[in-house]
Amino acid sequence: MKKVVLSALVEDTSGVLTRVAGLFARRGYNIDSLTVGETESKGYSRMTIVVRGEDEILEQIEKQVAKLVDVKEVIELKDGSSVCRELVLCKIAVTPADRQQIIAISDIFRAKVVDVSPDSLMIELTGNQSKLDAFLALLDGFKVIEMVRTGITGLTRGTADMLAGEFD
Image 1 (tube, rainbow, N blue to C red):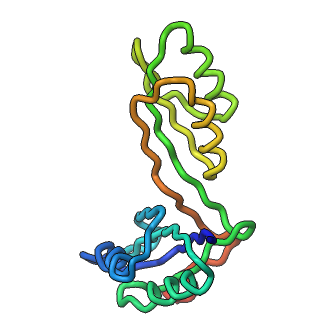
Image 2 (cartoon, rainbow, N blue to C red):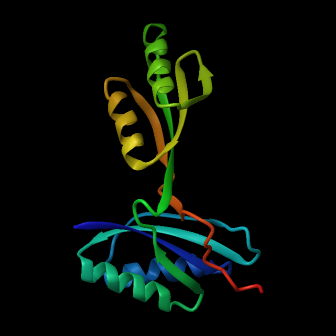
């Protein structure tokens, strides 16, 4: 199975998320990760969708998403020609003895301590999936109280944009 990261530029209209997610549900495709946010262009949002499957299934998914009425364009964010990131917030139970060790691990990964209490630390880390996975693996011996990951978001490298020529 192959993993694909799709970037879809969609009109910022009511129900667009439901229509995109519904397409996946109707066809029995699983979404590994989905992020949606506003863009630099008023009236448009960008969806970053991570899916896994065989090549022919992934090709079908991309074509079917592109056919949706609210979708302006869909591209695959490929390794090397795009930058993809994810955010994790992790609340860890700490004792005075292990507080410094967790801070040291965070420093190695350039993570930020964003909240401190007598019994916990909240860490924020941004990076690619493998960086986040490696960080979380090092926290394996500690008690993670809560954790949340945003899912992947990304853009292609260079000056090209998905709306090139749209507003000329």
